[in-house]
Image (cartoon, rainbow, N blue to C red; front, side, top):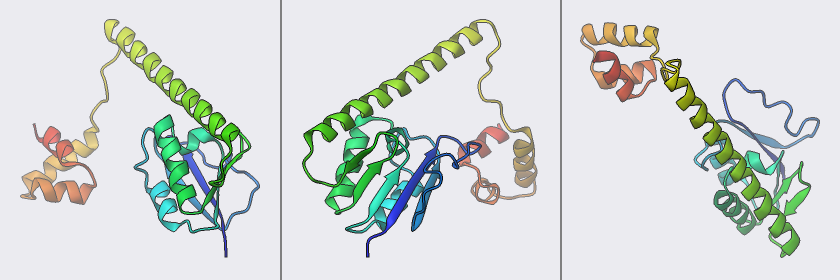
Length: 180
């Protein structure tokens, strides 16, 4: 029995998923709260593993699936090769594995536009950082003082660096920086 599956992604933890595919009902929804710069996302990977032949995957828009053309085309092919159709609601495009040159063109063009948009955002960000640095206003990401204090306390109590990183759920480089 085929299922209606949803994939919803926002770029950061504090963003809200509610506006995507609003008012639609699905058998199962897969979510990510992370950047779409690559395809290494837990929700997406779970969806790829879960989807079966005959299933339909709904995505709010192309940029939610991928932010570069190569990843987008690869994902559409991966789903279609499994017999899973993909529907992008905002663009009203469906990819079921059947040959449709116009849909293929639209997918490639829109994917390229979203990739260009991401590149422009990153370029403006870099320019803004350069200007802020020149004015002495940009200091980069500041360390989490509370986390660093806790790391130092645990290390003084005899806990290993590896154990500290596991206990606090942070990376080992974070532990090393806190102890420098």
